[in-house]
Image 1: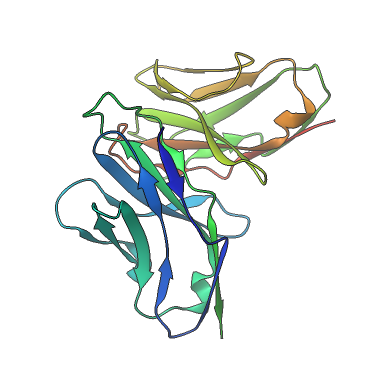
Image 2: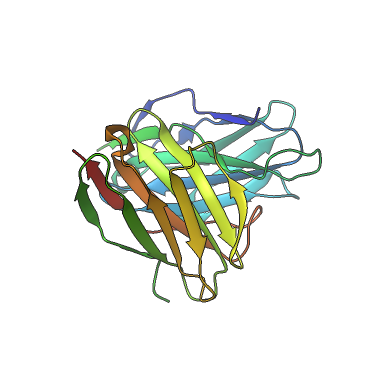
Length: 117
Length: 113
């Protein structure tokens, strides 16, 4: 069955330090991978996606993510965290459909990122 | 461009009643998806419509239904409300489905008493 795991409920990082939010996935076919961010009292916003091509994907607000097929991971990273990055981050996967998998999008449980001044 | 809009933003209903939620996608977007978000279950996919046809459906009972109109606007309906249906219902639109990113509305907060 298709699944997404975000192993950390919360990540704490000091402002200016690099941050990583982890995501691993399981799909039958080719993975379409997405990161979204949810700020307090606001809807989810798209950050970046991997469909095919370069394993390092760059997105909004200085975020990037690395697709690792052998480890079935798609970790979100940023070289220097800002206090304003504090939010809830969701990883999502869709099956690309190459192996009869489901097209249904599956979201992780979310990781709360807290950036301390 | 205006974002995804959802109405109403807040709703209080009684068990056994039914409710209809509305979603207007971003102009030009032909795909609309619906999600239920709760603290316990997280974000769960309900269904997805593209060009007025349901393309995908999540694992929810038949009390949850939806439709999409020719202008891409969508509605979802929940009949015979249960206490467990209390949640934030999110609508998302995209240009297409599968490989396209989604743009989410602010949600409708449904409380069932």
